[in-house]
Length: 260
Ligand code: 13P
Image 1 (cartoon, rainbow, N blue to C red):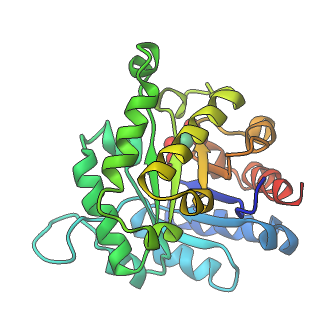
Image 2 (tube, rainbow, N blue to C red):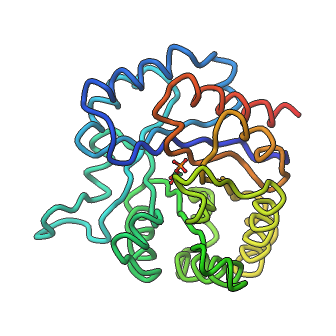
Image 3 (cartoon, rainbow, N blue to C red):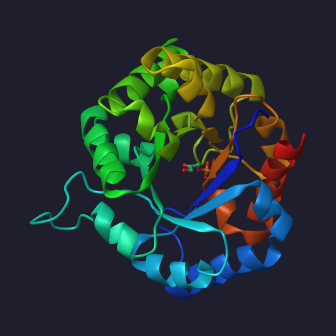
């Protein structure tokens, strides 16, 4: 892997009770060797109501906490939304923007995701911006165009100076929660394309520094081959992040890439 530091996120989605969330965070901390955390960034994305509890559980560890979503507004009459400032107050350093379960499940457009991303960055959060094509887009040969548009429109108006606070998660929708993973070479091809697009939109130096992680049915058994790809800088893990032992194995696989 080039000089980029590996990054692994655990997206718990709408899972865990408060007690389970605390136990899961505690188990990840206990099982992760300090040397692994020196080689790899780890962020947990618990459900909103458990952010503070998980932040307390992780406060003496380098493990970061992030929101699964953020509002495009800074404050006010926006029932049910969570602002970037609230996430920071709850202990978050980062947030997901554009997860496919929001893009496709809730109809969030590139324009709204761009507004969320810019709001989060201006409030001081880091952002993991998620992109990925659906199965029908893949089967009709549109994957690269769809993802290129998601990157272009999602980052519209974001200056190069802010790119060091943005990572991209490539998560093909057909691979999320299905047990079907993209072939390592296909993931590499898309990551390489995203980096090339970033170079066109910004410049080579900025593009080279952006971490692009893969998500979609990553498991301990396939993590190593995916993370071994030169443009894959880690993973965004869903189901497998709910099991501390498996999640830690995945983190170890990412950390080992920084040594190779
Ligand atoms: P799975 O790892 O369960 O496929 O989910 C991936 C994902 O959506 C992470 O954000």
